[in-house]
Length: 113
Length: 121
Image (cartoon, rainbow over all chains, first blue to last red; front, side):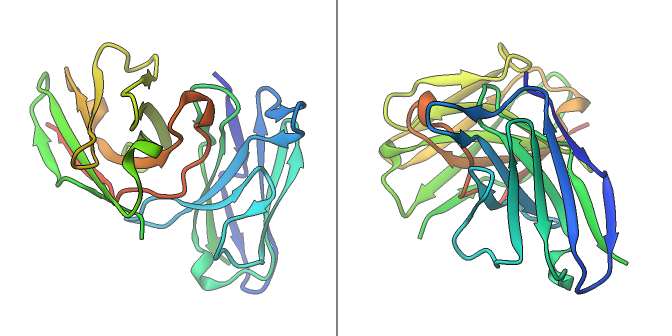
């Protein structure tokens, strides 16, 4: 299985500041035939299902604020939230869909400092 | 709008089985598949398996192979997840999510059910 490792496990950022979450896969999730990285990011708030934020590593889902962005390729990826808002407090997960079984990172808990 | 509505919470004894339903609406059921993902209390997300809405093909997590069965009712657009031989480790919130119709088209999940808490005690 492809192991997804996120860092840090938790993060406290001041309102209006930048939050950066990293995700590393145990094998490349880049499909060279189409040059796409099979990597998604989700946001999960308590008592709710995960919400898709980013797919193909950097494509923002419709309706997601542009302060959320994804970057990276191959095995190393980053979710960046610029100008943190109070409603961004949540747990964030990366997920690879290049190999089966599809696997998630362990999650990063984002809080307000 | 796309909706996935799951059945309610259940409490089961160790060794029992549970069946969770996921009723879909707002899209053509046979054009997509359904994946099931679970989340133990305070833990991360685990993909359990996938079923095609068009032909019933399945792909199961090796960890759960032999204990899980996925099924669909194409007339009602409902998917079902049955898990047998329950232990306390199966206590979790179980989610259904819309997926690709074929294994090759299974990617990320945009639409999710609200989740069903299964407690094994």
